[in-house]
Figure: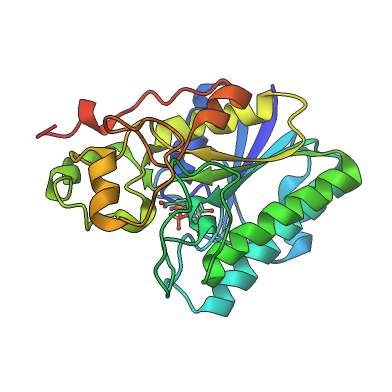
Length: 283
Ligand SMILES: NC(=O)c1ccc[n+]([C@@H]2O[C@H](COP(=O)([O-])OP(=O)(O)OC[C@H]3O[C@@H](n4cnc5c(N)ncnc54)[C@H](O)[C@@H]3O)[C@@H](O)[C@H]2O)c1
């Protein structure tokens, strides 16, 4: 049985990823600074900013799925967010390289494009936003994700380790769908995340595909549902909140996502299965 270490497995997304790998018969170890609410697998309590702890936590693993982070701007001070997220990712990849682990997934974010936490508001250069879109963060959280992707590239160059950086859209666990009716008719809500979302169970499946595929190198891949989180058509959302956007690279006739998931489909063979329209009470 293959052993996968999931970091941040006590967190909101992590517990779904741990659950998924356990269900898929992997040997799973969670590494987090806090214990999970529910026991799903062994947990090692460790601070990933300490390289020695990371080495011990990763020993014997075949792959690592690194989700641990301060998951947004403004939760902690800027420099604490940057230091925690950048050093923990550096240490994970440094230890993985040292231990001969050949597959890693790291949680990047749509926040790396910079729109969500921008002090000086700006919109996308074109839509849907794909992985070639400029990453222009004005905040230390978005910057930490850009740096982490570069760290991944560096370790891949040095060791050949495969590192998939998943630029995840707004993470939605199943219990959150009941809240959707409160915002789906107001384009001013969730505009800075381009109204994106992605179900925790679909992210977990992408993590599995990313460690099971070969030959991906170091690559950044968006993860978003096929549709937006809104009951307003995508073109209307843009017209109302980002009227300056003029370049449409897809027809966007309905509720299509403004965060492209084409590359995830092409490279991983991923297909999101969970859409809010199948769950929310007023959908
Ligand atoms: N929530 C979202 O909408 C979203 C969107 C895009 C990307 N992401 C990314 O997905 C990942 C998971 O996010 P989440 O929303 O589940 O966050 P979360 O805060 O619920 O979980 C993160 C976990 O990481 C742990 N952690 C943080 N720093 C650590 C350290 N130094 N050592 C060990 N453990 C540490 C925390 O204890 C926590 O349990 C993060 O990398 C986040 O940046 C989240």
